[in-house]
Length: 183
Image (cartoon, rainbow, N blue to C red; front, top):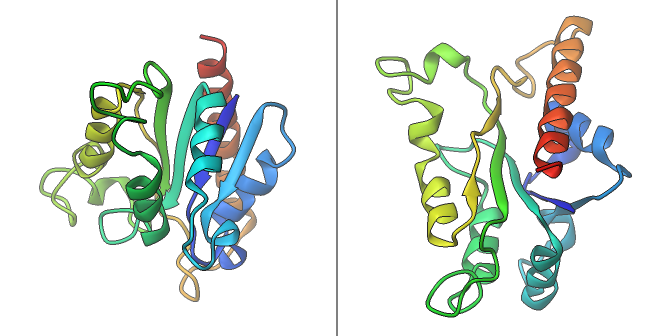
């Protein structure tokens, strides 16, 4: 089973993440957990979320890239759910060998995420804390799936060309999920 831990504070106004989630909703063996929708009061049901992770073979954190990190609900989820003796520590082996990757969207283009680019670092470098989380919890980290140049609300015209680009990205995302589920 694949579990997508989605964090997006305003999904209804999103173009990329909303379209991706709509395309994956109802897909066989994919569970989507939209944190802001499930826990608007930030009171995460830790036992329930841990149980879902136990049943998962592939875990994906999906979010828009905010200030070189994730939205606050995803950070809270990590703090509350990926606990000592569950996800790490001598007895914390519950996530051992599960596959893990990031799906994120950025407002900048791919060239801005490179050494010497506007953001100074590659996405791989900026996502290092997530790689380390996978390492600490003994999950197998797979390369991130990144949508560059996501439409910026109020600044980007939503054209058929842009929607075709999003749809192509969704097909690549689905193929990646299917590939990892067949391992």
